[in-house]
Image (cartoon, rainbow, N blue to C red; front, side, top):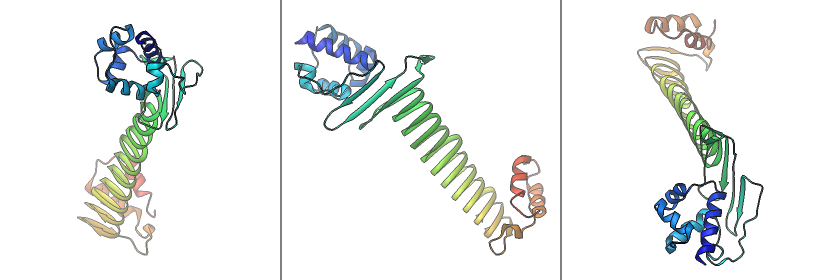
Length: 262
């Protein structure tokens, strides 16, 4: 029975593209322990057997006693596992980039992690990542964090967009950034329904060193009339910004000025 288990363990590990070190780390044992299991020198304890069954999505009867599994064989490189309660699909491309799979898809009911240049998974980590939790370069997920992030909760170094967004440029229901756009926006430059900025705030309610909007609060304020930003002349805005921030980045200055009547 031990040799049958050992062969199955080795086969399932290889199907998932895991090394003995990877498997050992996943279930909390040493690599030597996995090596002994696969060579038939020893046998895992019950809690480790349960962890193995969860990882490979097979029943203990199948793994230990040889009862028919509900797994289905698929083309090399992909793996779909189905049980009464759970469906799992994984694909890992053979093509790699600096040792990382070009594409890794790992999804199902549970916490499955995909790591690749392009990663799609419940948890996705990659240059381009898509998942409930997405981490990396370009990220799309319910919770996303990376260089550019889109999600219900988006955190980014450059651009973040979502229900709650934080980044250098942030856009969302609640936005926090150097440039912030949203219902509630907080930043160095803030634009939105409620805009709070250290420098320039523009919105329905605006609070900043320079504040422009319906209700304004700041060192320098310009109140719009009849909810019409065109009621403020662009030259007023340009002159005020040039006075307070003479070294302001010109494209940003021109973009702000363009919001008002020329």
